[in-house]
Image (cartoon, rainbow, N blue to C red; front, side, top):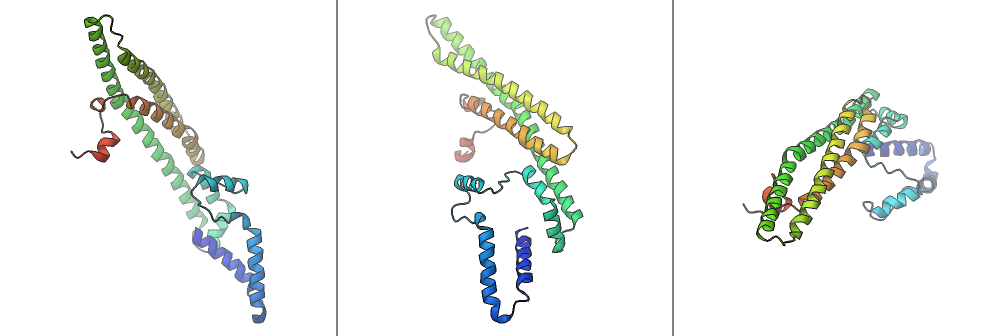
Length: 237
């Protein structure tokens, strides 16, 4: 895409300069370059293009910041893009539309699979771990109370309250994710579907992840049905 865009601009510059007499070509070229730089000065940036600094500066300059596939793909099939690739015999309109549909479908399917996997992990794996730990913690607190009636069991009660709250939030978030995912399955339009996954399903997943991460921090490793990041990265077993 970048090479085609550059080729197109060079072709335009050639058309403007091809009839210039040889003795005037250097002057005409400098004038053309000055015009191009003046017209497109707002896209030039010599800082780090991967930082928030450039994001803020680009917005100030009125430049687009297309951060996702659903945001970018409509530009792929704009008349400007279609004519560009056709003009240089790179891709036909049919081939452009085919790629548009395939990329959007792959985007939605990937997030759909991730959503179903996440729901499965939470319901079948993490829920069992949090319930098992709360059960053992409750038994431990009850045994302490039996042995020492005046024992406050502050630690156990604090953890139980936090885990109980997290379990309720987790159930609600998982149900929301499941409901929204089913709604996404009913959307036929590819772009609308991809936008729904971007704007609704991904935030649902991020919220569920936030809740699970908070609860996971309180649960000993032996209650988790999967290895922690520390075990994956540093375990020698």
